[in-house]
Length: 230
Image (cartoon, rainbow, N blue to C red):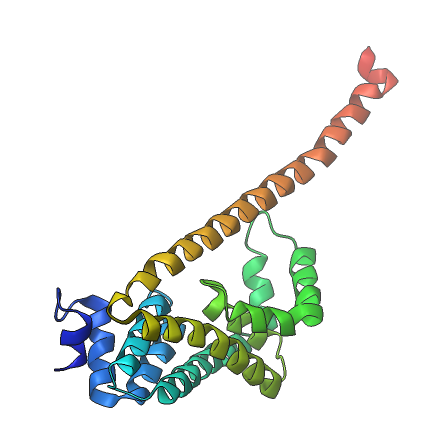
């Protein structure tokens, strides 16, 4: 019996899960690695489906558990490296040019972000690999800032190994209930998205208030002039 039939008895060829199951069935561990590499490049492909499914495959003897962890982590590193080089080729100057077009962003904001990344980039890359939504995105600023490649790859491999191990082992232990992982990770992803949106709203609100303050002070000075009272 193939993995698709084992993992998806209700929908034998259903969606992303069916596609990932076919890859693992056909290619084994390298198929799981390819799926995760593509997930890094195309975030709409959910790791919370692919990784638990890979763990389920290991539990069913379709692939070896060590192979599942090795290939999925390698796939994560390959996908992240591609995004790193995208950021490196994009470059700082283009980033500044794009940010300069946004009405509420100043050059000093970008400079502060760069300074923050230069101080905390290693932690950001390591921990970012374990946070939904940011797992892929964190590789781009690392490339823009030209973080030393050996450090980037090492941190990415370590962070990915932790994240992948949690989800793969969850699928391994849950067996036929492997798809329950998607529900819980999906809730975490939504929570992260809400926090990001709240942070954006706060930033925009503060920036608008900051812009209004000089104008208000200028009008107050004009109103306070003796000739303005006549």
